[in-house]
Image (cartoon, rainbow, N blue to C red; front, side, top):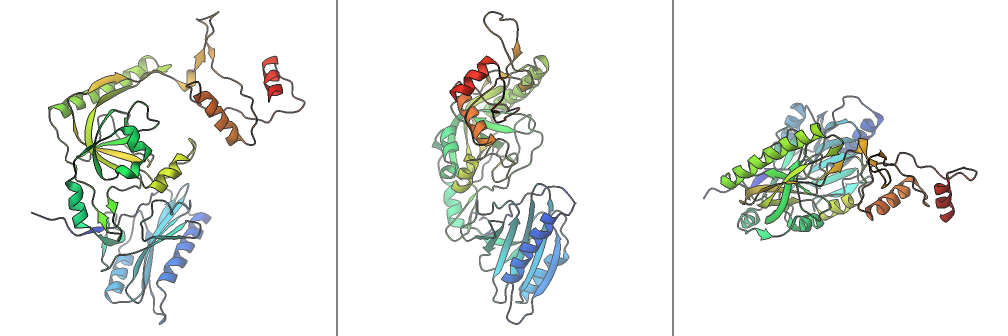
Length: 422
């Protein structure tokens, strides 16, 4: 039997935001990580090799060659890869000391590097710096992007054991509730697949969220055109920091799969026709079936952080799928022959939500309301609106204006009554 290689490149989970404009954020971030790199490579002899810096999106070869030669010669060194700046800035570097230790150092201006860390990592400077010692014996190699990285050993025994497990029966909701408990596990679940040109989702009735949905051949379902993957990676880590490889998933392209694919194409076409025919009431379609495949889930700390995430927060790229917005992904191995094309409940177009009353059922007015309640901030007001609307089975689309009630304000009778009650 042919065994897997016992080493693998460290995956550097960073998101590159395209912008070539330098900013104070870039300068201060690079200065912070540069200081950490110099500190880690410090030597009593004072002979430290500065291998320079390059960019993460188009890295040069000289810094990598310099670091490789320094490590081979037993000399301390450091090098820096600076990332572009958008709504945040990231950077990455390597530092080696005089006694043969090598460290990977990451910088993230958002201060999120305490989330999803490896067991042997440490964070500093308000969670903006993460330092991870490379596992010995130290080996370096270049990633597909040309970035020099440590090669992390693979736990062959645990990786092989993972491949022998049988799928467990569970639900989409159970996985969403505790993604880490199902990480690198084979499961059999019933749900419905849906999506559009940039989203591919697997949901189920009664669940508040959905899984990212992908095929075992590395592709996605019909209708998915383009997306930006998050920084979460499949697989697991043992107590020593060695990698447990993700269970290989080979897509079974049998009659049931091709039938499912046909229904998914029909679903995408039906969504497109619906949007053109009746843009005021959006009708979306889904394909329900029973699926078997692998689950990849984020760590408990990332999941807890995402539970507090607000709808208007920027994507943090810490999860799977489009912009890392999903705390778990499902990698399809096979689908059973029970697939059905279904219709989601009709969703009114947010641009044309309206209502009528029983006296004039054919006359529609914009469905906009005034809410009066006690709150100390806009955020508290919005949260109260959400709770109130959810109690009626509604979803808040937007708060157009939220202003304190003026003491000398004049209102209609309905609002006057609400002010008095509060």
